[in-house]
Length: 167
Image 1 (cartoon, rainbow, N blue to C red):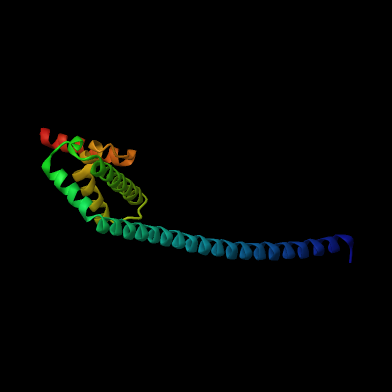
Image 2 (cartoon, one colour; image 1 turned 135 degrees about the horizontal axis):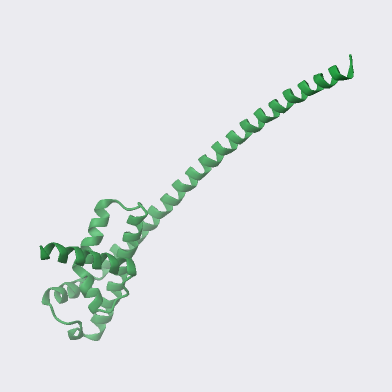
């Protein structure tokens, strides 16, 4: 066998071994990509579960607070229906309503954000926007902490309402 034939044989063997190595590498990468995808999907499910669990915990705490604050809810309803200025409220009731309004505004902001992320269904979002419509001016009067998201939603709603009432 001549040197040329040996080098051709070695070249052919090298090509064969190289193609096997490329094939093994591609199979390895395919397995890695599949495992990474499965891990990402699992982490996404865990994150979604944590969001829902947190939302449920918050809802339970909110409901418990509302149940334990029947007198405050009554005062809030009476004040809302009376049309009186917040200054007419006694200091303790005004302070408690301020804290309750803060809690409601923060909860509404969180719901709007969760809806933007696609984590809240349409029915829950409608309930939140109805709450904002009904209580926004009261939150303002009580000097509550209204987030930009809630304020912008309310301003958009008012602008749309004005636009439809002008025609």
